[in-house]
Image 1 (cartoon, rainbow over the protein chains, first blue to last red):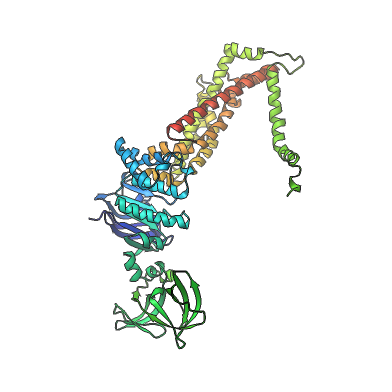
Image 2 (image 1 turned 30 degrees about the vertical axis):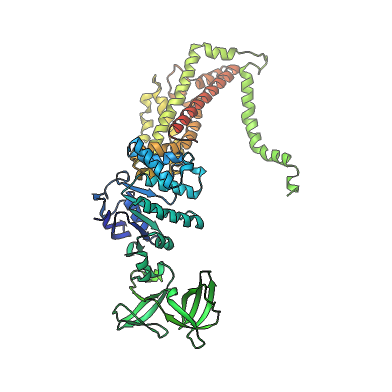
Amino acid sequence: MAELQLHSVGKRFGDTVALRPTSLEVEKGEFVTVLGPSGCGKSTLLRILMGITEASSGEIVLNGRRIEALPPDKRDIAMVFQSYALFPHMSVRKNLAFGLEMRKVPKDEQRRRLDHALQICNLAAYVDRMPRQLSGGQQQRVALARAIVMQPSLMLLDEPLSNLDAKLRDSLRHDLVALHRQTGSTSLYVTHDQAEAMAMSDRIVVMNGGEVVEIGTPVSLYRNPRHVFTASFLGQTNLMPVEAGNRQARLPWGDVVPLESNHRGAAVVSLRPENLALTPDAAGHGEITAVSFMGAQANYVVRIADFNLKASRSGGEALLEIGARVAVSVTGPVSLLAETPALGRAA
Amino acid sequence: MIGLHRRPRLELMLLLLPGAGFLAALFGFPLLTALLGSFGLVGDDPALTLKFYARIFTSTVLLRSLATSLYYGVVPVAVTVVLAIVLALALRRHFAGRKLFNGLYKIPLKLPKMVRDPWGIGVIAATTWKQLPFMTLVITGAFAAIPEDIRHAARTLGAGPIRAFLRIELPLALPGITAAVLLTFIGSMGSFAIPDLVGAPNPLPLSVRMVRAFAEGDMSQVFAIGMVLSAFAFAVLIGYYALTSRVGTAKGDSR
């Protein structure tokens, strides 16, 4: 049985729906990311799990126990906050010991867990510092360690990296993944950063407009998205209107590509920039209108049949120049997308 | 830039004059006069003497007045601070404090029964009534300044509402509470109107004795009482600081 189960958990404030009834399962030891733009309902979901906001409907089962009616202190869930939320009047050691004291963990067990957390979070040198004497990255590691010592059934992480600068965020992201592997904690990670979600998760729960759009592994969601929102929120893509039929789709510039679906009629497909091959060709339909060289890759905008297509090539190849004519061919899989929900907002 | 800084000292003095000068003229000068006067150095026939202080510390009546002053100073503040914390917390919860507010409105109505009682309940109630809004305002602000996440962190780490309050919120709100206590205590210890109106006729607090002495024209005695009153107010505040800072460190506070 899954460690965490949500059955139709929803929240409404009067007439406003903050979270449509959502069902979700997280396996023991799994690292699941809830990904979505602000206002998508992920924070509401988080607050319901923490026990700060009461769900309007549904059941939550954690480790075989119904918890939706329990107060936060009785839930066996540890939380890592975006703001770190360290206790400013306590040293690092006291911050880490606080939860263990509250849960009446025996003293020697406390010391064992504390030493372990200090070591794996690389904080041993800072035990007697006050939070204000630490850098942002160090503070976030303390916040992590404070959650790890609890050995909770569920670890909730609310955008823990978003207050850090880019370089630190990268290194802490790796630390987080390594820590998760080491502790084996069941984790639910909430973020609006798709790169973070892709890099860290076993599975991603994509949310938009107060509901779950799609759930899947990073690879399957990226390569075979089923919704317009997923395709456009995860990485770069070109959303193209097509005419479908006979397991084929006709692209706006006349090319025909195979489809896995037998949908007939007008539809939308997602073409990833790296799945478009550009070949210099004086008779090609496309024209390069913008080039940006990123190092590992070069990004192009190609004008074709009144569309501006994003395409990318390896940075090692010769650069194409603005104004060059190119032939465009599709080299990767093409996914047919359901337009619901929220095509307008996504595209 | 150099031109601007050519005479920094003079400019600084001029800039400080309105504030510092005001304090010096209206606060410092009278204080100095009172200090000198309490030693008999002000008046028609100045001569250094300690007799006005001796009179306070040898007269049982005045010593009891001093005790009464301390009582009227400390107890209302203690009562107020507890009530204000309760109110501040109640206000945070969907204005559940409404019932309490209704009760508070009625305090003045009950006061006639408590006038001139030997325990000074009337004085304590009236002073509390007077101090409560200010105290509640400051303390509500102190609690509101604690980020919500910190409270939630304490709760998810297994602290129930009471322990989260005692271990996390109260220590973090303490600087604000201290400021409120400091400001109200100074007022309540020296307050004259309430003890004079509703306090027991005997013993009178020093503030009332001071006004009586003033009416009798015994200025040096007024000055000495004022000095003693100030000194004790100061001593109580020092004691309060010592107490709260120890409470803070006992809970890991290094403020």
